[in-house]
Each structure stands twice: as C-alpha cells, then as structure tokens.
Length: 64
Image (tube, rainbow, N blue to C red; front, side, top):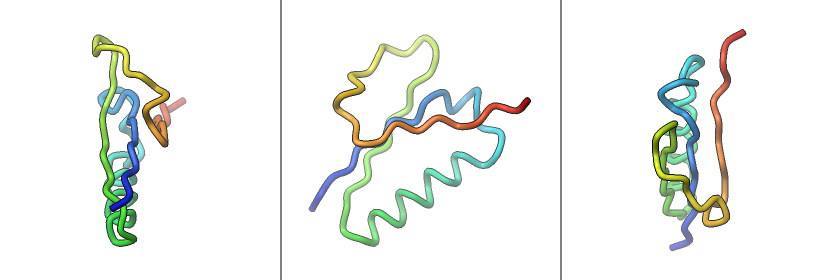
C-alpha cells in the first residue's frame, strides 16, 4: 500500500472554514484509492517537524 504523509499546520488557530473536514475528506478519498494517509499536526509550541518527510503541507485559511 502506498503511503502519503500530510502535515496540517496550525489546526487550532486556522480552523475557521471547515479545514478539518477538508483534511478528513482528503484522507477518505486517498484511502479509497489504495493509499495509506497519515496526518500529523503542527502548531506553535510543537517540536519543529522535518518538512522534507511530508508529501503535502496544508495550512488552513485565517479570516480577515
């Protein structure tokens, strides 16, 4: 099974427009296509991740 690693940036601060739902739908659709979707989160205060180990880096949108 192929694996896709996703880093979700600042989910606690940028979750305003249903971004968590978007990530869940992406995971669901990837798994239906035979991929193993691994979703990690990063926020202020977390140890800095190795960005090169991720296939996709996702950040939500902040309101204006």
